[in-house]
Amino acid sequence: MKNTVSEARALVPEFAARLMNEPSVAYHEDRVAAVVTAICSEHELPCDTDQFGNFHIRSGRNRRSSRKSSDRPFYFVAHMDHPGFEVLSGNRGKNRLRIRFLGGVPDRYFRPGIPLVAHPGNIKGTLGEKLPGKKVFSMDIPGGYGTKPEIAVWNLKGFEMRGDRIRGRACDDLMGLASLLAGLVIHARADSGVAAYGLVTRAEEVGFHGALACAASSILPKNAVMISLENSRELPPVKIGRGVIIRSGDRISQFDSATVYFLSRVAEELKDAVAEFDFQKALMPGGACEASAFQHHGLTSAAMCIPLGNYHNCGPRDRIAEEYVSITDAACMAAMVAAVAGRIPDYRNIAASAAERMDRLTAEAVARLTHTPRRPG
Image (cartoon, rainbow, N blue to C red; front, side, top):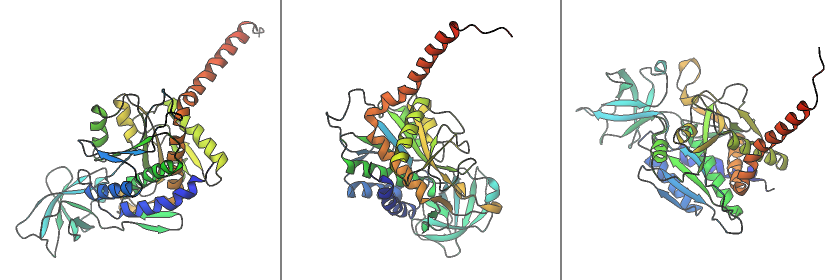
């Protein structure tokens, strides 16, 4: 088996740097969207948008000799937004903005004076006072502004790579997106004759809006298998740097057991074949992911993720800080995307094998116990 982890180590940091250096907030993902479009174009991955602004990407092409009529379409999913502020209004003096925070960060982190930067225009300022309304604040801009900006984000480093760590304002979920794109590129290069798909969504941080709108429409095939790719808060027993996580569920729901089993089997095979690959298995209840949104609408769903430090920029001592992840973990997730895509024709057999084994054991148990009387006390 080809060392796809090595390939992913080259692609993931490149894609991550391009994505993470662009600001993105729910409903305002245009800069990250432009990077997604560029990467797909550069690597000849067909890419379209739906009526909600989500991207649909195809990797590889089905060949009759490789594809089975029973094959189900696999969609790997990541989102483009990160918690941040949308600009509601300005003032006459053009030195103050009214902004609303979109995303999940506890109130104790919103301290006046935190450095912010507004876009477009790269306008520096600070978080001001709390205003009436849910998570509505002022942003003070001593130097003033010209054209009213659309969003504001924490003034943190966009991307920094040191050793095995990547740090930045928005690892969640742009590292998941980088892994998705890298995995689809690797799969396309393999030319396996099996198509796999990427779904890149909008406005996840405000309640899975892009995913839910897509799932509620007729865009996705009813037999689609949805695999969410996320960054999830590092919680025991998982550890940063020990590989991708096969996620059995999240804070909201448990995922499809047969598909989780399929992912686990592919991960075990990849680990046996590629020394650099590693994986972990856990529930990851620290948050919720888009697999729960798709599952709510009746789609078969499972998930993979990488452990995240400073989740949603919530650092030690209630201070805003850069998030951080392991390059190894992200490369392993990209390798899993490629490996799972290559095994789509085997999904039905592998996913059913656990249930079939239980059926065999049940028959053995009934037969043996029926004809082997229990000895009295």
